Length: 105
Image 1: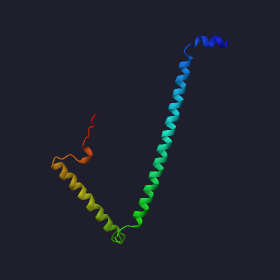
Image 2: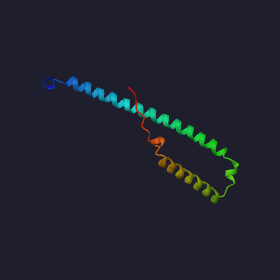
Image 3: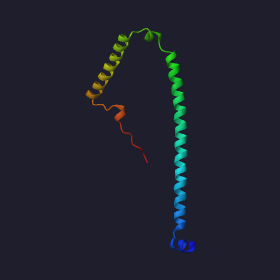
Image 4: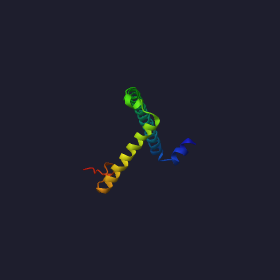
């Protein structure tokens, strides 16, 4: 009976090799994803440390500002950004984020 099954499936070594290859590829994906997650966790810890050190080293002048003064300061910098964008549009310059870099072969 088993002999008849293997007699009909003449390509079973190909199926075996294909399934093995898929299994190895699946494991490779799992290992790469695990490494990426570990790297992202390390990066997040470093960012948290930087944020914690920057919070303690805030300029004392900014700590004394009221909420209204902080809003005025924020609006001022927003207006500066809007003016900068208008100036780049008027000068027909492409902003740096829109420049296309081509790879050389």
